[in-house]
Length: 215
Image (cartoon, rainbow, N blue to C red; front, side, top):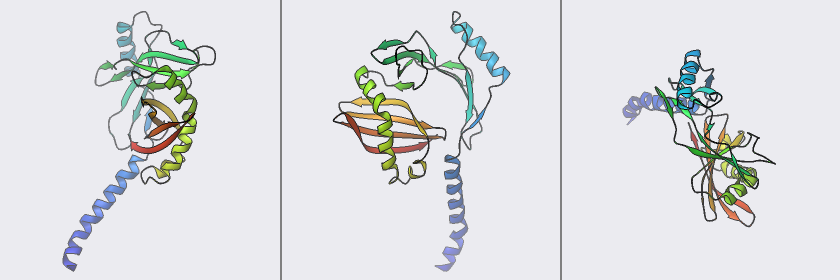
């Protein structure tokens, strides 16, 4: 038995060190750089061919997850038409463009945000799943900060989420709304995605599950 332990020791140690290194990389912030002149030029040509009447292309960003070799170059969302307003809710149909290895457009999707009097504000935009009722989206946007605060309480008891409890999160997507249940996705300046499952209780939402994943 002692001989077996001695032989396995270095193997186990290497596995532990590799796991620790991977875990550390998973929590490291994504790298960022400015798009190159060649990337910007090729995107401008692509965009002008696709949308010749547009005033100009959306901005580009380049990011790379810790431990990855390849950079992800993508555009900001581009509005296909002017936003429409329903009460306090603004909604726009948008697409994004990714260099992979040629420029490609995503499938159109919707973004929604709360506008005070018009839809001029660009703050608080979130991606919304198809088929969601405007009234549900309005309620979730109005209460999403309360949902996040309650999610942080559950994160303390989740071994994978605990270290991210104090991270700065913002609502990125409303994934689903089914009856009184909803699923929201929060993102951070760190490469972590927080998914929160909540249930409508009275006028607010109770959080019953949280999940953290690194990207």
